[in-house]
Length: 141
Image: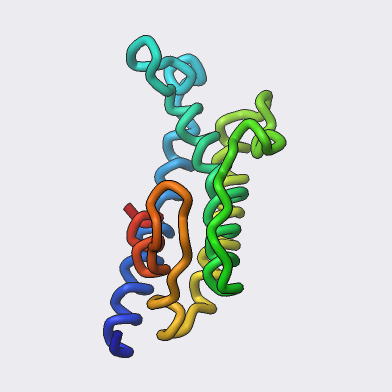
């Protein structure tokens, strides 16, 4: 990858990741019953989605970034094996703030990547060998 490619990749990934907390901060001011309502049986509510984002910002992406930079395989994520990432009684505004802080920390981690890092590979138990660039595309999407 060229320097232009890494600037482009890190630029659009960073911009995409940076927009999400502001959107959740706006959504968090909607009525609680609306945020807690699932759109259909078996579907996630907006609050379920926000709690999941907090979980991934805390237990998934930083761990995976570390695996790539350490040159080790990506550990399988077991949600049941983790302590809750978010206080189940926290207000939507508090959850949105917690998510924003975790995302800020992860964007700082992203900013420390260098050009050769994007070509690093790691083995994921479900997807096989992946590159860090692929992980970043997945995260931003």
